[in-house]
Length: 313
Image (cartoon, rainbow, N blue to C red; front, side, top):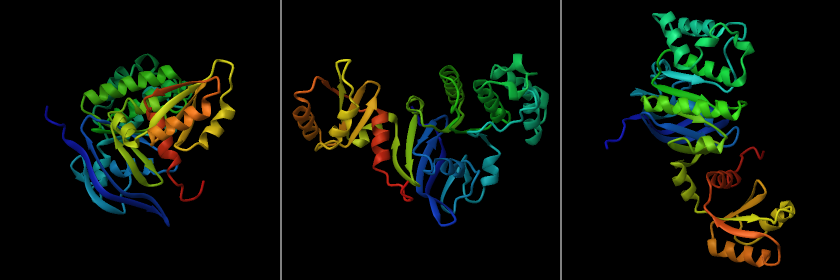
C-alpha cells in the first residue's frame, strides 16, 4: 500500500521569545490523514511547535513545507487551510450556536454561509440546539461547537490544543470518534494532550520537553525506545504501598517508581539488576511482584523525569 503524501515536512525549526529558546531544531514529518499527538510537560514548546507547523507562527530559522507551502515565507497561505481549536473556549457566550457559526463564516468570507452553517450543525449533531446560547452549553457541547467552527471552511489540517481538558469521559470519547472520522476523510490532525488514553489513539506521537524533541513514533515505538523493564508491585489489599515507594527509589537498577491505582510500577533499563534488587528487597514483604509490559505512561514519566527544566522548575 502506497504511503500517504507528506502534509508536513520540516527540519531545523527554531523559535525564540526574547532570550528564551522555545523550540530547538525541530524535525518532523506528518502524512495526510494522520492523527499526530504532541506530549510533554507544560511550557515544553508543544503549542509553539504546532503553531509554527500550521502557519500560525513563523519560525526564526529552519526549512520545510506544510500543505506544500513554505513554512517560513508562506505562513499566511498555510493558515487559511488550517482549523485551530484552542484550549480555552473562544467563541461568544451571548450568541446562539448558529449565530456563532455564522459569524465565523463571515470572518472567513465564505459564500453560501447559511448552507455551510446548516451542514456544520448537522455534521456535529448541533441542529437541535442551534438557537441555544453558547454560554449555557456544558463543556462537551462547547467543545463540539468549537470543533464545528474550526471545520466550517473545510480545512485540510486541524490543530487541537488540549481539546478535551475539562470535559467528561463520554464527551471525550465521542470527540475522539469524530476526530477519527475526520482522519478517515483525509484531514490531518495535530493534537496536544496530557491524557495517555488519548495519546494511544493517535497514529504517531512526539514527546517534546523544553524545546527539544526527545522521542517520536507510534505509541509502541516510543515505549520500546525507552528500553524499560517494568514490574508491578501489589499488596494484599491491606498494605499501603506509599511508604514502600520511596524505599524502592533508592535501589540499584530502579529508574522510575510510579503509583498505578493500588499498585506500583517500578521500571529500569537494566532488567536483571532491577529484578535482583526487587527480589532481595521485597522477599519478606507481603506483596506480589509481577513482570508487566511498560506502558506509554511509564515511558512518558521516564522521559519527563529525565528532562531537565532549564529554569529549574
